[in-house]
Length: 499
Image 1 (cartoon, one colour):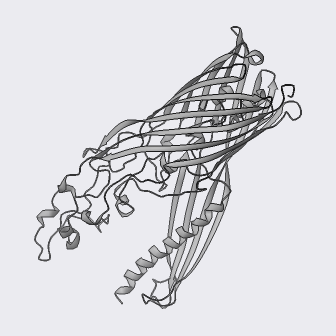
Image 2 (tube, one colour):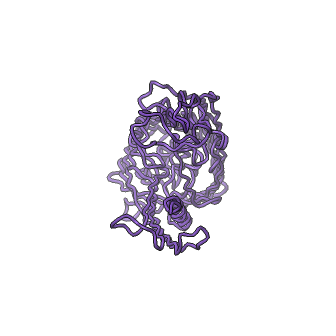
């Protein structure tokens, strides 16, 4: 009968795994929130991060819907490839920090070493895989599809834009950022890159021109929440007994709102504009619930199954706001060139990690600026952005990998014939080198996962003295990288005489 508690624990894991397996059905989900639009920007026009000011393509509907009021009806189709060259180098661990097999096997602690049960369950360090960088989602292929409508009722416009993944529709990869990671690959990953760019982005927006010089807009982005329920029935406590597993997956659509405003007027022989936008938080949430039942198992009173649950948050984007200004030489009707700059703020202090836990980040500002020039058939644009990391120095148990980012982009649009424009864009993102080192004086320092142990005779084990941890971020790590983005596409526009 001593095997039954062990079997029950194994069945907990089995039931959780079956719930996770049921989540494979999420590939048919209608949408998933993704930071790709925030990180890569407008992929169908000259300026990716200052596209709010330019507003020449349907992607403006996803970032600044008020800008739809000054554009002609058009559609866009683009193909984007993303290659991420990320580097994570762990600092050398002191051998004294390893969890020795002798201490792991002792399973007996010096009196007073533990106030209660062992709070953490480490493995022998020698049994763990080597620390590395999680290689999930380092390349993406995306199809961009957008549509801007002609004015409705004289002043109302509609725009939709979506980024459709071509390589893999959905990837939800859970991760821990502390010593729990040792049981799930023993590796860290970049928090806002890698597989954070996976998934579908879909937005729809409306713009209304209050006056010829003032427009407001609002829209929604689509995300999903999912619940996987999985019941496991074991007709026998025997190891070889077949299990009956009944998974159920429910996917719900969630909408996240955003809005913007823009005003324009003649200024210094050209046209100036001021604009502002705000986006509500969005994320993709997955919850799992399950119950394991064993025929004839002695459950505690009032219980007829072994329950378990989990909750994960993926690709969260917090509340964001942005404001900027632009100037067009010659005005919108005879535009020759233009300049634009903007600043954005994000409430990263409310960011939740993949385990649904507060990350302890700080709110941050970012800045971008761009310029463009119009030609008879060829238009050129140059854009730049600086996005600092909201993650403070990782001196404690948590190990978020998130360097600051400096990015530049070049774009061109070439009018092949009236109504048909070829668009190309290239981006380079430099993830600036960063080093994080653990500090024993941190508010939540790396902990000793195996406190002082004793041998079967009760004598202290010398090997158990000092800090022993499998936290993969200990004693520190260096991170940096490059992200390359290339886009080609076509824009189909209404004729010059159309509204």
